[in-house]
Length: 299
Image 1 (cartoon, rainbow, N blue to C red):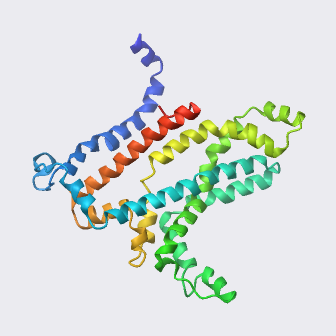
Image 2 (tube, rainbow, N blue to C red):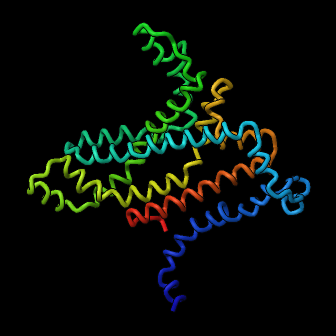
Image 3 (tube, one colour):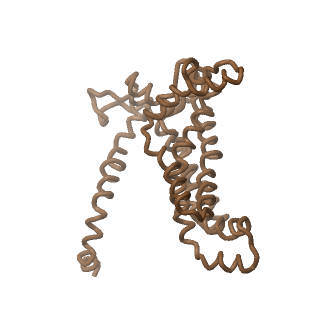
């Protein structure tokens, strides 16, 4: 019976073959190499024959002089992104949903979607150009109002605001798409009934749109927290300078320097595994909490 069902729906199973193969090849099979985090890996001996060292690499990382700095920078930047960048697409989606003029709505949607398709390398290059102390547009404006040029990219205090601002500018439009789709699925009769009852736009947003978005918000919030420690490596690495490194050195950039530049593969694997375990624990905790509070969860 089961085989007959598979044969009847063979197109669907064939369609699933590519993504399933991707996850098996690139997500599950590489897990075999995670064991080097517990070994003194040698390329000559290979993964299997390298000697076991247990948790030595983890202890070394916890006792390293920059452990607190790297962990603090990662958590601080991640929480900033979660607190600032997560709710803005919801607000934008709610605002766009209230726009009745279709041409203006399409123009605004296109305008806020466009930055998402800019390469991270190009984006960081634009940041350096606009914030240049000598020729940057921002400093020209500051000097026009009588101020002194600011060394934005050479000041560690400016790294996090610039990172968060560019992240919001680049991803808000694209992130709002799923919320707009959820709003489109809300029964319009609810709004019609609310208008008849005398509800204004604010009350309709508060009592119809937001409750309709809550399942989507809950799932995306769980995913965001479960990915809390995985800050984008490319942007942080490209924005990093020798002067702002005390604020820009996060776990992904630290793993790159240790693993790729210094060829300490076991040590970097241990740090990466530590990072992944934190994300996994956060995912389970937040999923369970959200599920108890709202009844919506990933599993």
